[in-house]
Structure formats: structure tokens, C-alpha cells
Amino acid sequence: MNNTQIPRRTFLRGVGTLMALPALESMLPRSMWAAAATAAKAPKRMAWVYIPQGAYMPYWMPTTEGSNFELMDCVQPMAEHKKDMILFGGLTCDKARANGDGGGDHARAGGAFLTGTQPRKTAGSNFQAGTSADQLAAQQLGHQTRFPSLEMAIEGYRGTGNCDSGYACVYEHTLSWKDSTTPLPTEVNPKQIFNRLFADKPSDPDTIAKNKLRASVLDAVLDDAKSLNRKLGGSDKLKLDQYLTGVRELEQQITRAATLTPLEIPDDFSRPDGVPADLTEHIHIMCDLMVLAFQTDVTRIATFMLGREGSETKYRMVGVNEGHHTISHHQNRADNLAKLKAIGTYHMQQFAYLVGKLKSIKEGDGTLLDNCMVVYGSAIADPNRHAHDNLPIILAGRGGGTITPGRHIRYSKETPVNNLWLAMLDRFGAPAEKLGDSTGLLEGLA
Image 1 (tube, one colour):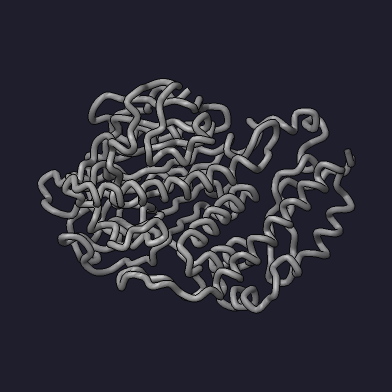
Image 2 (tube, one colour):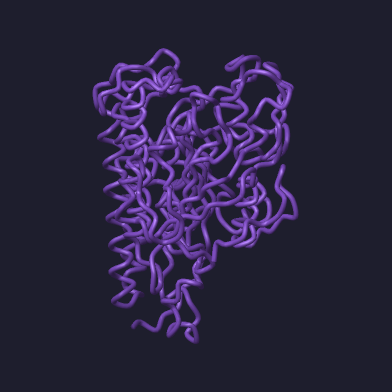
């Protein structure tokens, strides 16, 4: 092992470029080298992956509890990661219900999922929800990373207009609320996210323009990387090489995807220039970016919407030519249920891809996934009834050793899903006494 110690917040620098590094043994004090592989010393990360329109629960929810639970049809893609996840039953998002406000379940679902508050029914600019779980964490610990949080989506952001029975579009298009009146827009363009993560001044248009013109971000930092490599020991040299290779491959993938011929998409499905034409590739690149951001400690908090609520995306790659929202009101018709199963399975395949990527990255004695808490789910259960109880919720990862996965846990009826968010915040190191309609920390995770 090389005896040279380098600062923890070391960056590779180039003109207009700043790249954070993964955790290296050389960044730890000499007294800690022997324990450098301990996963508990790594920072914890949190992410929420949201699916619109809920799920047909007989294809989703196990009938048995404990570690021997069966994987239903739509959850089968997670078979390889069964021991890395908890599947929850009984959790409820009450504030997505009407509670006297009439129609608008999809808008309320988006606005209430991470806030636990009843969104104000308005199509104007006086929208209101509550501070979301991810932003409570960002407010307490976001200063420790370059970015407090990362908000990503697959469908273009829309913050104005009436999108659902008198509710403003903003409720359907973001999960993150900095406070009760400040929703955080999502980013759908992976190239913009990449530039944002690695530019010296991410919000500076001139810096972003320079990055777009540059053939490769890595070219700007290659000399710095070579200089650093001479100071590292064998294991750190290998880790740095793997990291740079991964960034290079991701950058090439983003560039290649932007040149593909666009596919036919619904009129209300907005994709800015530079977004991959293929939906699966788009999702995978966004997952890769989240993993890269966690690996480099650029941020520890992320949200990712696989679709907005009320989305009419057509999943032709799995044989579904109708809009998702339309067929989600399945009326128990066999043909609609088969299509919902195909969409649900497809979504779960994308989550399995993300979990697999996190799991593939070594961190101490464990993996990056071991230090994560990654939620997959929705504020809607059966979409035909707009049900908001017994939600489809999965939590992957071990939260730095604070969570025991590999189980199906069923809670009592009407247990607020926000109790789970409180428990995650507590493990993350950003505890809160109350979050929306929470009634206390969800028990039984460890």
C-alpha cells in the first residue's frame, strides 16, 4: 500500500471541469487503513424511484410474510435481489385520497407521496403541499456534498396549468418540495445532469456550453488523473481506473443515445433535445447517473420518476400500444390486466437494473447498495379504484447496517407510509419528529 495520504475531498480538475472521486483507502488517516473496508464508515444514501398509476396488487403483493415470501409476477425481476429488499404491506398514503376535495387522485398522489400532506386543490400558481422527506434530509445534511439532492424524471417537467380535475400540473410532475410552496423541477436530460455534476459552475451557461463542445469530459482531467495515479497504492490504482472507465463508458453511451432516431411518443410526453429516443436506454442512463453521483459522493439524496402520474406513455416494447393511464382503469378485463402486468414487470426490470448497478460497486467489505436505502413504489395501489392503501412499496439496501432485508413485512391497516420515511430519515442521520401525517417511526426494519 502506498503511504501517501490524500484529502477526502480531492477532485480531478480540468478547464471548466471538476470531477469528484470515489472513496479511496489513501483518503483515510493511517490509523484507519486497517479498517478502511468497513462499510459502516461509508456515507448513507437515500433514493426514491416512483412508478405512476400504482399496480394491480394480485400481481404484486405476496400472501406470506417473513423471509420465505413468494415473488409475485410483477416482482419476479427482483428474484436475484430478493435478499436485498423488504417488501411492505399495509402502508397508506391517506393525503392522496379526496378527503372532501373530489377528483384528482393522480395529482394528489404525486403531491402527497413524500410530503404526507393534502395538496391544495388549485390549478393556479398558489399551489401548496409540504416539505418532502428528501428535502428534510437535504436541509440537514445536503451541505456535506456538492449537491444537496438530485431530482430526475423520464417525462418532461410541467409546472403550470390544470392537469387533473382542477389540480396544478406541478403536483404530477415532481415528488420533491423544498417547502410547502416550492416544488423542485425534475431534469429529464441525462446530458444536462452529467454536465451539472461535473462542471465547476453547474448553473453557468458558458461552462455548460464548453462542456457540450468538449469531446470528452475525461480528456480535461486526464493529466490530473495520471498525476494522482502515481501517488496511489495498488488497490486504489485499480479502483481509480475502474471509476474512470465507468465514467468514460457512461459519457459515450449518453452521446450515442442522443443520435438515435426518435420514436413515436404521445403528444403530452415531452422530451427535450438530447434525451435518448429509446425509453429503456433513457432509464438505464439515468440510473447510471444516480449510481455515479452516489459513488462519487456528489450527492446522497435522489428522486427518480419513471413516469408522471396520469401518464399516457405507450410501452410498445412489451406489446402495450394503449396509454398507460387509460388501461390502468382496467375494469377487471383480462386484456387490460395482462397489459398492466407487462408494464409492471417492465418497471420492475428497470428497478432491478438500478439495484444491480449499486450492488456491483464494492464499498469497504460490502457494496454501495449496502449503504443505500432505495425505495420503489407509488402512492396508488389498484389504479382502477384509485386506492391509496396497501401500497406497492419496496425498500432495497441495508442502510449502512441499520436494516435487515430479505423479508415481506405486513403492517396494520392505515399505517402511514410517511412512518417509513421517518424511519429512513432517522437512519440517514437527519431525524425529524413529524412528517406530514406520520404517527411515528416505522418499526421492524432491523
